[in-house]
Length: 134
Image 1 (tube, one colour):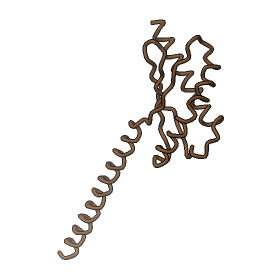
Image 2 (cartoon, one colour; image 1 turned 90 degrees about the vertical axis):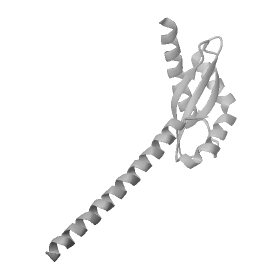
Image 3 (tube, helix red, strand yellow; image 1 turned 180 degrees about the horizontal axis):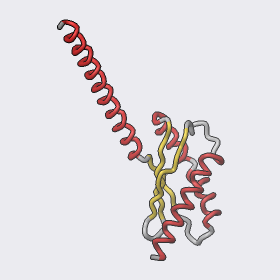
Image 4 (tube, one colour; image 1 turned 45 degrees about the vertical axis):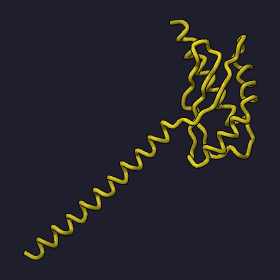
């Protein structure tokens, strides 16, 4: 129980520090748009942390992720100062594909809804034409 609470607290701190570092401490022009830290996963021994990121707009994800990975050492140093523990987790960055897939699903739903509205509108026009003929 105590270990789980420690893991959650450390994940929260990592999320805050990484988010702050990306927004306020990196001046790489390759970092474009909005970057959000969506999740932090820690290994049971707390030695490694996977930081999942989402990007807006999505087309900047690849180059922005490359820039953030390039700045990993600087972010790692900021994190070590904040955590102040014997072993700072080694961080790795990954694109969070859950949000990308959710966005794609929403686009599909919107497309289907538009098609249904068009069919309804066409049906209403046909119904009105049929009534006008009678």
